[in-house]
Length: 564
Image (cartoon, rainbow, N blue to C red):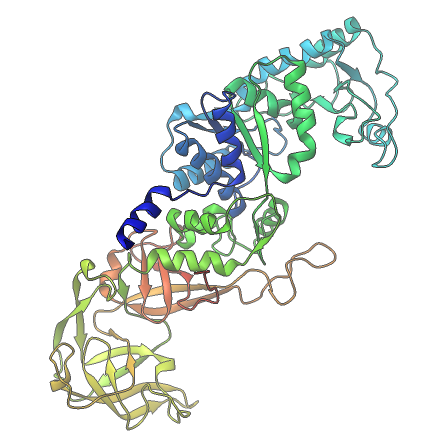
């Protein structure tokens, strides 16, 4: 009977959909959508950050789920802020998160500039657009407020013929920047300020990364965006909640231009991550003032920075699954992102020994000039990862915190007279130590018991402490970078004057670390668990054969508790 109930449960299990999937399901069922086509439309005016990853994965995931098509489209309508560098970085980020993109999936708004110009001409001919001579300040003044209607421009009732002539002259480079604009003629009394005759074209003498100097007029985002979606046949234009008030304008544009099967816009909540800097202008300032070493500095949460730090696409996808999709604004603790990378790496990556703050340990009764190779498991939680050979000798390095001259209670590591296990090796007992003139320990002397070799089955006595080590003769020297939040979390992200509350300890560089010799062969971006220290990866920018650099991805301890 129980078996039958289990089978019934399996057969009747309902897959839970988010509200966007429910809308798409209804559109397909009612025949309003024959093929799902989605897009991620970044403006190439900076690097993408973790918040953009939510939109990338949502849009690409919906296309996969409904066997549709996903577009990466660059909304490059503002040459004043756009660079080829940003285009290339965005391309790399999206490919990293989604997997490789077919060139047929990559689009540029600037490829439609001719069509957009013709669309503007069409609106003028319909009496739905006019050339305006007001300055930017005057247009702002005429626009009105949330409680007061705007007033009409003196140029609002120009004839169609005059508007066509002036707009063509704008295109032909007869006016200076800001001298004239083209505005949609909608409703200056609309309760939605976006509908109060918005600017749809402006004069801008700027070189464009894609079209060069072909154009000296450029469409505004709110005019270009719905046209791009309509041209590409986007079925569902999925964007964040701040665009909800812009939707009536988008709908007006595609309706007046008489596009068939216009896209349906659906808004969802942004991803807000606690105590991080995501604003492009703030990140740009950090870069320009050299507080960070670029848009990919591992202390940032740009996608490039997370990739360089050692996060994986799988961890980002898991994070977004946990965040979910809704219309409710909420903040997510950064600890959840750290939890996701730990979960992704813990069974995949080898566990290596690294000593970050070294002090020499000499085993006085171990044979001189002898190196033996010990069998060590690559990952104790995943036997399929096998074992490796690790060199062991008379002189080792251990972490300074693993030895104390006068230890407190319940200190189970090494101190005079105490016996501990050297991980994967032998029991050793501290017999002496050497200090410098300042009282700092420079060398620890021990004896070892050759009967206690790891794996030998020795169980005559137990020890409470186990410490890791590396063989001094074969160890590889490395630089290790320990990262904390770039923001001082106790003070919040921003000061009252808009500056960032910087954490002075956001980066600690440890230049004289020692790691297992096998790590000398590690490739850029390759990651490992360093026993007791956390997860680390080889830095993709600064590491070299002659100078190994490891970035700490995340520590081993987590403050995040997933819901069961």
